[in-house]
Length: 179
Image 1 (spheres, one colour):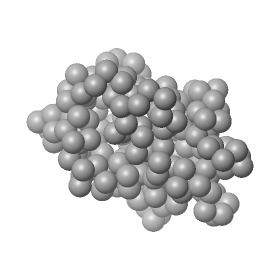
Image 2: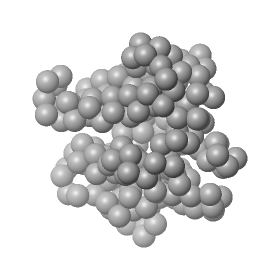
Image 3: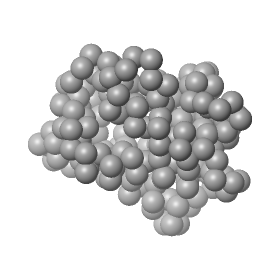
Image 4: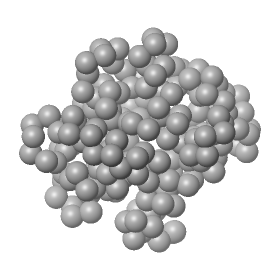
């Protein structure tokens, strides 16, 4: 794993490690679902809640399986980095889990259902995942490539792709996840 990808995957780890104990576990992947669903008004058991939960558990289970851990074990940063490197190098699984996140992001967090993600929607999504509001606001400014104050599906797809696979230090997608 390149140093740049290691930095980006460490940021991803940090948004899940909300208590900053250096470990992530299943509850760290459940917590943002609860926060986000509450913000969005999705009740447990609703289709939207279940989609959020299933996506988050899919990512957790992939990382956990790559780490050789049981469902209730914790994963260290080093183990997380190894698992994420394996995920990035398995393009089919990457497309299913990570690139599927772009579709999930628009579908779930697009509150006004206009097919775009507004700055408010982007900030709400990222703060649910433990990103500071200021960092999310700054990231949005970079990710909005056409300056229309919204993120289109293609802007999100490009950002997610660049975040996970690009080794270009100037790639705009490097801003997709901030901690």
